[in-house]
Length: 129
Image 1 (tube, rainbow, N blue to C red):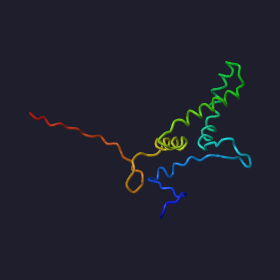
Image 2 (cartoon, rainbow, N blue to C red; image 1 turned 90 degrees about the horizontal axis):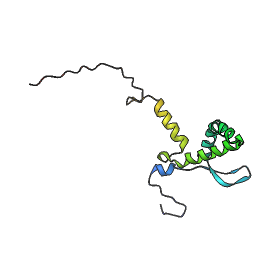
Image 3 (cartoon, rainbow, N blue to C red; image 1 turned 45 degrees about the vertical axis):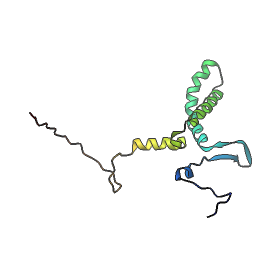
Image 4 (tube, rainbow, N blue to C red; image 1 turned 45 degrees about the horizontal axis):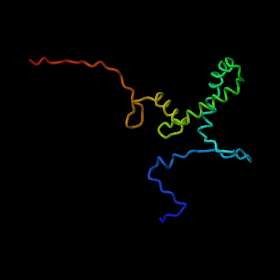
C-alpha cells in the first residue's frame, strides 16, 4: 500500500488506542478551547469533595463557598490530570485498580475461579551429623 498524506502507520496497538477525546462545542456554541473528556469526568467526580473541604476554609477566610469550591475543584482537576498513570485516562486507571482489589486472584486455565483451601504444611528437618 503506497503511503499518502492521509495514511498513518502505527507500530503498536497501544498508540492506536491512546486517543484523547475532547469536547470542541456544545450544540451550536463553540468552546474557546477544547475540554478533554477525562478532565470533565475528574471535575465532576471532585466537585462534591471540593465543596465539603471548601466550606470550612471559606468560612475561615470569609469567602463565598461556591467560588472557593469551584477554584479548589479546578486546581485539583489540573493536578490530577498532570499525573499520567501508565499512559491511561485517570478514571480508567482508577477503575482498573479497583477491579484488581475486588476480583479473585486465583484463576484456572479454563477461566473459572480456583478456590484454594488452606492446608497445614508439615515441615521436617533431618539431622545430618
